[in-house]
Length: 205
Image 1 (cartoon, rainbow, N blue to C red):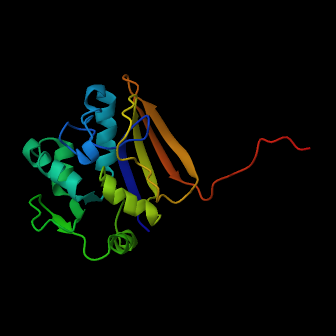
Image 2 (cartoon, rainbow, N blue to C red; image 1 turned 30 degrees about the horizontal axis):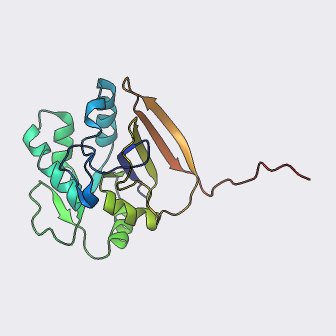
Image 3 (cartoon, one colour; image 1 turned 180 degrees about the vertical axis):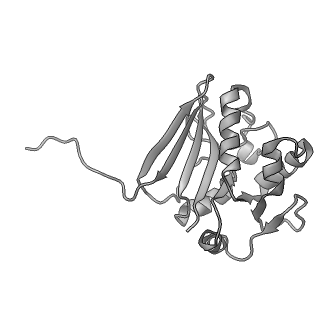
C-alpha cells in the first residue's frame, strides 16, 4: 500500500488558509493571506525540496492546482524542484475544471475518497498532497492520510480554514522528525500510530 503524505503550512492557531499571498484564498473574508512569506530561510527551501522530490505522484485540490500550475512551469526545468513537479503525475480533485494545462495532469474520476483509495492501492511510491485545504478535509474524514509534514509558523491569524476540521477522525500519531528554521518555523513529520493512548491524571481515592 502506498503512503499518502500531506505537506502543509499552518499558523500557530491551526489555520492553513492562503499562506502564499493576499489573494490566494479570500473565502470567508480572509484578509491575512501571505502570512508564511516573511519566514523563509535556506533550510526550509532544502526541506521543501526533500519532501517534494521524495514523492512519486502528487494530489491536488482545484485551488492549489491552479496556483502551482501558474508558477512552476514558468520556473523552468533547470530548477530540480520545478523539474520534478512539472514531470510528475498530477491528480486533481475538482468538479469544475475541464482543462488541465500543467503537463501530466489528470482529473480524479468519481467519488474522491474511492479514487484516492484506488491510487493508494496501486503500484508505486508515495503520493504527496500539497496544501489543498478543502480536499484535505475529505481525506481526513475517510482516514486516508498516512504521514503529515506540518510546517508551523510563529503567527496567529484568528479565523480561517484549519488543518484539522470537525470531520477529522481521532487518531494517535508518532513524531518521526522535527526541524526548526532560523525564523522559528517548526517542520514536524508525524506518522500514524494507531489509537489515542488515553488515561487520567486524577488521583485514586
